[in-house]
Every structure is written in C-alpha cells, then in structure tokens.
Image 1 (cartoon, one colour):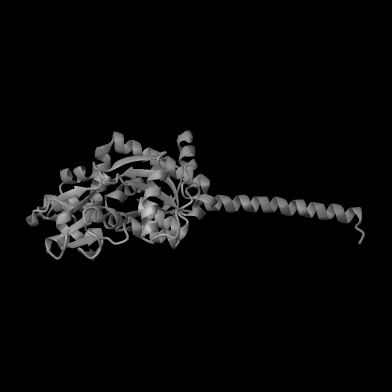
Image 2 (spheres, one colour):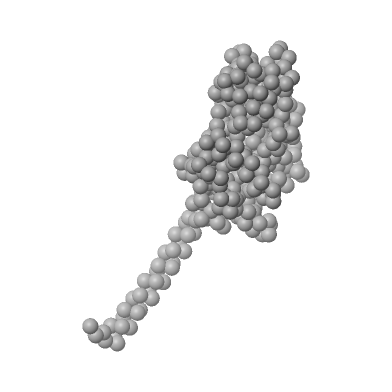
Length: 332
C-alpha cells in the first residue's frame, strides 16, 4: 500500500497532537493523584498518639498534603485495614509489620518511635505478683494478634515456663482491660499506655515488668506498595511533616502533651495531667530509619515463621524502603 506525502504529514501531525494531549492528560492525572488525600490509620493507645498529634499539628496542611484519618484500638487492626487496602499508612510494631508484609506486601518507610517502656505486664494489685512465672493458671487479658501479644505468647511467656495451656488467655482490646481488671474477670493484662498508668494510679494493678529489657519495640510507619509506587513525592512530603512533629516533641513537649491529653479526656478517661505526662514520656519519638532494623526484624520473622504465622522470611530489600526518609531529610 502506498501513502502520499500529504497523508504522511497529516498522520504525523495527528500523532503529535494526540501525544501532546496524552502527555497533558497524564500530567493532569498525576496532579490529581497527588492532590488526593492519604488515608492515615492509627491506634488510640499511646503508640498512635504521635500520629494523632501529626494530624492535629497542621504539619501536613502546611505542606498541602490532605488526609483522612481512621482510628482503631490497636495497630494490628490498622495493619489488617492496610492489607485490605482500606488505609494507606499506619503504625505498628515489628511483628505486625512483618505479618502485614507477608499478607499484603506492606513496606516500611520509617521508624517513628520506640515504645518498649510503654508496654507492661500487670497483675491485679491485691494478688501481690512480682514475676511472670506466677501467672501460671491465671486469666491473662491479651489482644490476640497484636505485636505485644505475640511477644508475650512467643517469647516472654515461654521463657518463664508459660506455654499455651498453662494459663487462660482472655482475648480483648487493650482499652477494655482496665474494666476487666477492676471487675476481677481477669487476673493480669498485657497492656500499653496510658491504660497502664491509669490502672496504677487508680490502685487496680501493679507492674510485673515492662518490655524494654526484652524488646525496645520500634514502631514502624508502613505504607501500601501502591502508595509508594504511585505517589513517591507525597510520601516524602508526608515524612517531612513527621520531622516537623519530632521537633515539637523535643522542643514543645507541654504543647504536645496538652493536645494529646485532650483526646483521652474527650473519651471520658479519668486521669490527671501528671499521670498522662508520665505515660507519654515513655514514648521516644524520633522519625528515622535505623541501620540495625534488618537484624532486629529477622529475629522476629524467624519466630513468626516457626509459629507458622508467615509463609516465608521477607525479602528485606522489598520490605524496607529507607530512600523516602533519606529524601525527606535532605529536603528539610
């Protein structure tokens, strides 16, 4: 088939015009995608309160990043929402992060805080218990599937001779445990702040141990693979907001504490500001990407694999994405 010069030029012009509109359409679509809100999940225990403060601080609005928030009792529920692609971002400890990567390809973009001091094993005060092994045969409240629950069931309990069947695990959310302790329907709990501080201040429970000596519990900010693939610039902008918030925690702790205290007071919890500040002080907020994350996570992954909770050890090059935090720090 022959083609005239006029037809050739016409076809070329049409192609160029289509390409131009295509590029313009692509740019418009990309801009629209960047303008879409990120869906932020967080837990309502103390681990999620730095994220709560981030959303109230104006740090994201200042950088023109819109968001929607999804609050749940604990991080493992946020992880499940992310696996179901109902939420784009969320915080939780290492075991939940590994489970999320195994089930849904979730990736770590930063460590936001270390919270090992906020986790305690507590028993009803009148029982006078001081050692983990004394919990044998008792009813222990545990949020099954959570990182703190997994660490107790898989590591702390067995090291003290408490294997499955030697105690009665009572499954419940962390925010229901104080009432259960007060009603004496459970003997002990594995809980986080500020619920531990409330139970202690009200004379309901006493501390057996915290997790710091066993696990400092870095809390990861994880993202869906779709978010990091489709909106990498938004991820960097988001992490810049976190660096702003970290300065508030260090330089304006009273402002931060007052904002977060209002959350619990608004939910009807009765605790003094002094009690709350003590609980919040146990959270070490420092958004970063530590170099020793892989060996730390490798240890947890081996436990989870042994317990048949994951299918395989993660490929850490895919699971951990430090480049976003590196870009955020350079641009700040």
